[in-house]
Amino acid sequence: MKLIVGLGNPGKEYRETRHNVGFKVADEIAKRHGLTLAMAPSQVPDAFIAKKFGADPLLIAKPLTFMNNSGDVVAALARYYDIATGDLLVVVDEVALPFGRLRARARGSAGGHNGLKSVIARLGTTEFPRLRLGVGRGDARRDLADHVLSKFEADEQSALEEFIARAADAAEMFAVDGIEKVMNTYNPGATDPD
Image (cartoon, rainbow, N blue to C red; front, side, top):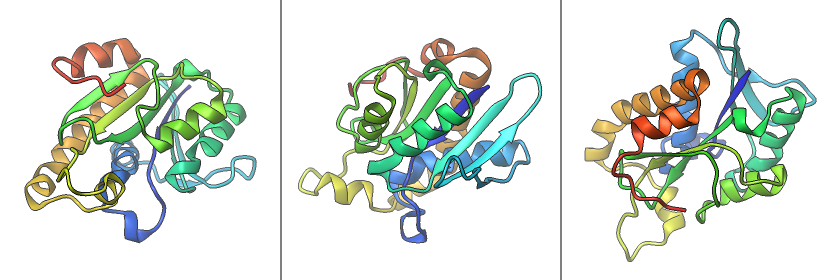
């Protein structure tokens, strides 16, 4: 079974922010398969999950902790469902990539992302795939935390649905074909934020 975890912040005030693109990807994948994200078993507190069975079993998850504590949930999910780190894909926002750009990696540093820092700390390794979704840096005078917690601009909003669909395509490709295929398909020309 593969595990795809979309990172974000819980609460309606964060729902449409750049930081929550990981949640949007998890929601899109669940929708495609007619699944409903629901509370995880009590052994994995603070997560919404959905399971897809069949030839390519898949677990989709959204931690209900704030981004900086996402690692607690990711580690608990991996333990409870016996998911190897190579079968885990973490989907996050990335300010070092322009809006709409995707970047997949088989392993690497947190690249300054607090959600990834938490996952790395709780898993005790950097050896897990991740899919970074470009949300841009915004105005250089603006604090990055304010930027990622802001909503998308009108021109970005019009392209957001297609961007999330492409990211969901990449995540589903991971579930079937692995991270190398995703990297070869979606990475050409991307700037490496690690």
